[in-house]
Image (cartoon, rainbow, N blue to C red; front, side, top):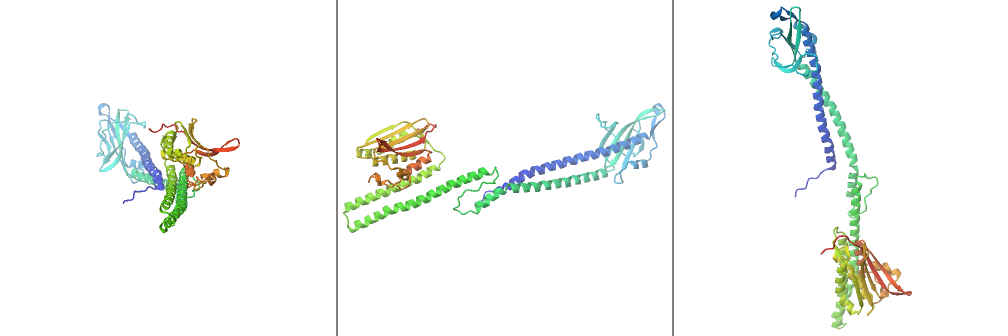
Length: 477
């Protein structure tokens, strides 16, 4: 199978930061280069305009009226003062009032444009790019008024300059811009890489710490000194590891207790079978003893599976809402044969009590409490069960007329495989019933209490009370 592509946090941060920076630097470089070229063009255009004005100052008018014409005595050598260096050349053409050639280069393309309406120069001038003798040139056209004693008119002066000097300056500007931007990019890359490496160092430290752990090490990760953004992840990881540690401990304890508790009934069963084979006891008596041992082993196995199922339900996120009173009535009906067998004066007062719990958990909780009470209540005595609510909690109270329990045993009875033989021989169970009850109650955020009912200084029975929070969600139908 093809492994899915993995993303790197460092790569994501570097690309997310550097790519926009590179794009910005590239755009900024282009903008700066164009601005520099525009500034260079403006400077050289001023030189062209100065050249054209200088040519205009050398013009004069000869003749009168319609025969007036522009005359020029300017020599080309006079343009050498306006040439910046020998890398570029200047060409000019002076046209008269009617466009006739006055002086300069006759093959210089004549001007056919218009003077711009808005101009930054205090002159009637137009700049444009053209080609002369197969070479690109920058052209300046100046409309120069020429006045004399004999007449007045507007001469057209064209000055063209080759682009070698401008191109050299453009390349120099580009090189200067690029190396400065390159230095800026290198500095940004170094800073970003350093910052990203430093920012992701705690993540790598956590990854290294987890990778170096043994498979059974579920201790919490240290959060001291961790960045604020990383703490929620560390807290969630620690909580998850805590749940895993609790689950692992529960599984280990379950396996240990199961192997220990099942060993005794299996050994007894093996002994009973061997005794029956040898004929030490009557067949019917042997079968009865074997059946009794199998019943105890079956009850023990069912209760241990119930204890494991409670832990499984604890891990589930969604829990339905069930009316506890319906479950309680169904359990009482199931145990009615045991109640009748002991001739108990049984009463049940159950009001509607919606709680957020699995029906199996409520049934197991109610059955264990009632079953223990039935076994510990003397024959033909009273057993009362009530389920009431106070708006926030639902309280189930099972009251028997048994001998009660001593304060020292009250807490120990909630531990697995703990029994109180002082309450009589009827308590010959596995000792898991109350442990299951407490696990169920804890998983439902409730409480369970065992209190002796005292009248006139004497114990008259035991009250087992379970309180669970009521649910505001409607019960399932």
